[in-house]
Image (cartoon, rainbow, N blue to C red; front, side, top):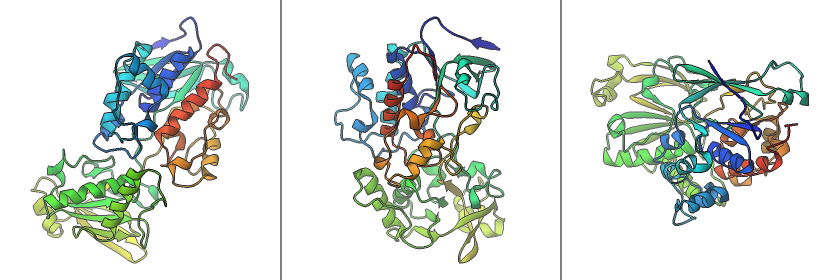
Length: 424
């Protein structure tokens, strides 16, 4: 096992996760004079590329920092022509995030294929020096694995920007895995699906869509196009609301793309397309392979390659069984808290986000991601000195995070830290 320790010079700052917030955090920290290293389990921008076919509802101008644009412009690059246009995830990754990860300021500082397993303190346990600033006297020890090799990195400041996209929430009633859910994982999609690229897996099939947020709305709109191309396709859409309106729309939404998305999905929920049937107030109780005699048309469309699934649902109206070929489980994501289980992090019991920020969000204007509280160094701090959670992970299970907020978090935090002083 290798141990990476201090390079001579500035304070060591380690960023976990090379998504848009992680790359920007590393960039700003390097410009500020920190000795920066960025660890990424896959490759920079991997999660953006995973939903790269989807167009964001926030424009380029809200997704880029002044520093990032300045650096790219100095290299003769400019990621967009129209600042008011909304990029796809792939466009944001390939035109902005990936070029920044390769810029000379971060050269030699980005380690891909390096999965962080945990963060601790040198010669301290979670319960030692509770709430004491003296914990900052001991460096962080970050255990990571690259290939078959374990590596320990030491750092004075750690920024966790690993996001939530890698941890989808489970499908079953009460947020638990439904009985049979894990066994049926090969026929359940938790992440957004590119139906153009995977049309053979969905066209002409019977699909259960579960969820009522933006991801589910995006899937419903895409499935409408699939139904128009292949009318055999049938969608059962299970939502938590027991009566209309099934989807939450923000009055006077300042983001036209988001408002249009929800308006189109709401029309589908009202029956605009005959191939989509709403299942209001429905929760998934269990999932099992359907008996051959119960598979009906679903088995025919499956082409014999996989037996359909029988999903038991329960609602206020009682129980029912549906037979489907695939399930879209768009019920949200949550943070991986195991990374800092040995650190003193005060978490919200409802969202799993850092407590100070979670409390500020609770008192804000609800679902509108443009009406969230401005970040401050105090709100972003934890009882663990020098450890910060930024980006979508800082919002925990709260889905109202906007990338612009992450950029504000970075600028606010870095302006409050001195690369040459001890973290208090």
